Image (tube, rainbow, N blue to C red; front, side):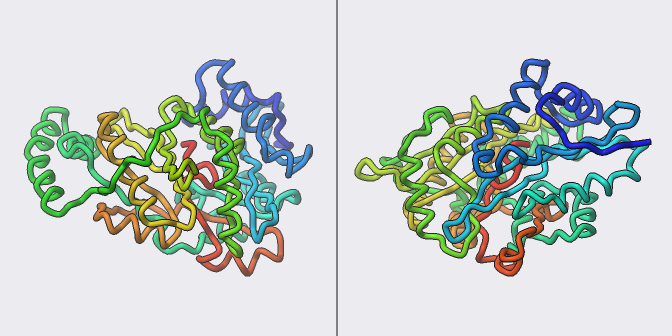
Amino acid sequence: MTSLRDARPGDALEVTAFLRRLGLVMPGGDEAAIAHWQALWVANPALEVHGEKAALGWILEDADQIVGFFGNIPQVSYFDGRPVKISSARAWAVDKAYRSETPRLCEAFFDQSGADVVLISSASAPARRRCLEFGGARMPQADYDKIIYWVLDANRFIQAGLRKKGQSALSAWIGGMLGGVALNARMRLGGRRPFAPLQDISVLSIDAIDDSFDDLWSRKLMECPGRLLACRNAETLRWYFGLSQNADKSRVLCCRQDGKLQGYAVVVREDSFAIGLKRIKIADVFVAGDDSKVIDALLTAAYEYGLAEHCHVLEVIGLPDNLRRQTRSHKPFERPMPTFPFFFKALSPELTGPLAQDDSWYVTAFDGDTALL
């Protein structure tokens, strides 16, 4: 008979082995696995708001063997200046023989008592159905499921696309060479790339995020009443972007004017080795006053950084409507995701009404676990 219990930091190795067995990408080696779960569940700065009894996840067991897991990342957002306790889904998996028990894990997550809002930011089609079944709703930004992107290397980009469609390496190479010529011409003639002056831009590693980010966070928080804004102080940014296994490749592109940080964009790597695609993503954009010139400079810096790193494509997921419109002014391509990925449930009654409105959100890949995949 199966039993359901709360996850504990000491479950790190068993949970990692279980998730790896079911095909999820997890840190390699015991030391890395323990460090990863310690970062999520012990060193997490959001625990100062959530408290000692924060939910870390739930484990389904049969005869003391893990057969299901629903991970939980405690996070903090702010609404009208007040902290909001967020619980974000992370690493959800159930053994095939126990799929009938999945509702027990879902109920534990969607009806937890210690959070104000629960998020699933990378929902698959089956997860989408479960979200709706347990009272969740789509995040009300209509085009969040559309990926904006610029091609950095047309030949390699097309090659990767052909490999994804099952073409042989030789066929993909030939197709990439031929198709790349046409795509390059189309991009040049259409001006399909961001372009702006870069004299105010600098590039930082994640561990170099400093107190100037706290100042920007304080200013930005005052700008956004009536909007759910994920905490972006320096400590939280270092913690979150340091969680990724590719953290050493992540960079913060900063725009400073007169010595003051006016905005930043975080770029992360998410390569697809199976098809040979080198991909860079803009995981977060945060700009004082949503200044269009600063946004343009950061997008241009991301594009140039991707070129310098020999990446094939630069992608953007999310962004509030005004930032998304500014991004689209640089003529990117767009493509739809297979399914809408971002669902939520407001557990705090006073947030139910506001979060049903699209202008109450400021969502990027920084929200939930999107940038950690």
